[in-house]
Length: 446
Image 1 (spheres, rainbow, N blue to C red):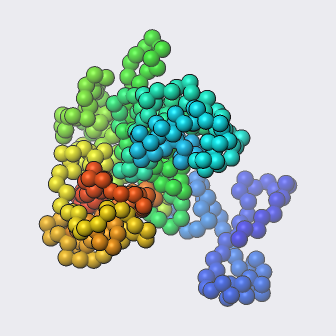
Image 2 (image 1 turned 60 degrees about the horizontal axis):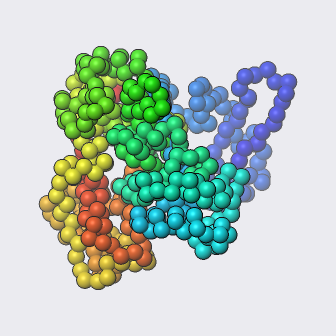
Image 3 (image 1 turned 120 degrees about the horizontal axis):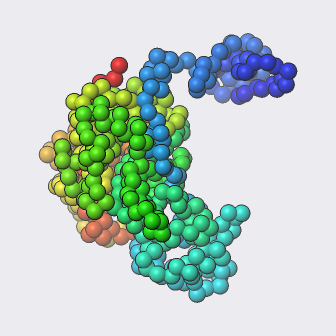
């Protein structure tokens, strides 16, 4: 409850505030509220810059956190993810089905198509007729693009980059750099809503949506490389890293800022010390943002604004954290050698359909070889299940999602194919390995 009084004559830069907490049952709180005055319920509070928090906090930790570099400052070109507002029209798990729907849209009467596919009403910023025009102009399968719709959930979309077409926000300043070019990018959020802890970082190499990483928050994407427009004379591929900050970090890490991957080099092939310097820095950022020490110490501040990267304590720490970040990046981009074996056999007889009320994780003997603590079975229906699934993988958060649960929930009523089964086994392995690697990150913080 906020009670505010506007005083146009006040000379104070910050208003006088009183803050109070009231705990108990609803009936008890109502009784106290009705029988008390605001001055009895709250005491004077002097909020402090820069965040002007309404609750007590450790300002020494806040000061330390604010010394770090904002991710938005370090990787200056970023954008919120794409937004179609009609995902049922523009996104599909099946490429062929999406292409059929795009062709049907071009041939159909607008209102008949809207009713047949349950497309919602037009808004001020989007119309079905504009979407139809966009598809008609760009009617080619080359615009069927993979999109990371949710963590480890690749789907298909019809993306032309046209403002006001299928996508009323196609994120034109960022997405072209990952659509047609080899790239890696950081997905992150500005704040964390609700009570969950910060887990809002994930590597991508494809299109993302506004909510690929979390549902309540706006998701941002910052690519590592910026490719020139094909119509410009200068065809130089640039780094999406602030030049001064990049040079300073490279000096502190004792790596050469000029040791960069050329546009024709496979920058993802090199491993360990052979990685280009910009990839080492990308991986260092990735490792920092996955560090349990970092997440625990700065938990409150990571929920408030774009994450900040602390200055590196030493070249040795940089090397260690960057190597762990590389392992996580390769896992999260689902590179086969990084994932390895997936010891979670699919068992039982049935129709392979994810039934309503499923998936469910049930404790069991599982597989003793996972090394990931308690294991159990993930049932997709009453008779079929994935065995030996670590409990830590089942409940693991990336952003606002629990991928081991979300991926199957989104497929309720669908028949799992052989590829689907293998894909889910990889998701489980990725999550279990992510937990293991995170625990190995040693990031000393003052």
